[in-house]
Image (cartoon, rainbow, N blue to C red):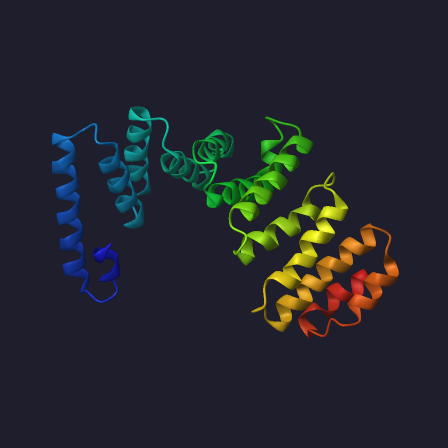
Length: 230
């Protein structure tokens, strides 16, 4: 970690010297301890951060072969496949990460985002309805595991619009909680949440309530979205 902390202040030549030294240290250690899974993972992370994704993938793959029950390894392999356009191959690795560490919210959050971005490509291996449900549930798990995280709560709320078979009443409650549970929001964030609540009210055929709420949205950058809902 100290290498990366100092990387912005050291001259390029010194940075390269230290990086090569660390690579030599990792390689020397792994030559003597080729089955040290943690060593392989740490080396893989270092190689990835220093711009060597192929070499990093090789270390993560070796680690996964030695111990297929480590979530972070699955996540790193999945990320590599995504970065190289191999979406179908990445899918099971992201799923396995959530199953190996079901209480880690970031794995569920990443799985939800992965499905949302690549749903069309993933439809060749599963039905869109199943994918949408898994995406929605993934964001729900992340939100439940980390209720103090605004981004997780917001993404879960948004997923009620991304999945056509979601429970609209639950969606309304989720959006309303964003207003009441987080006090340090900006005016723009507050108005954005109001738009989300209004959209949910419209879906629930509560147009008058939606119009009353929309009248309080004053952020100019959101006026176009406001007008569409009106």
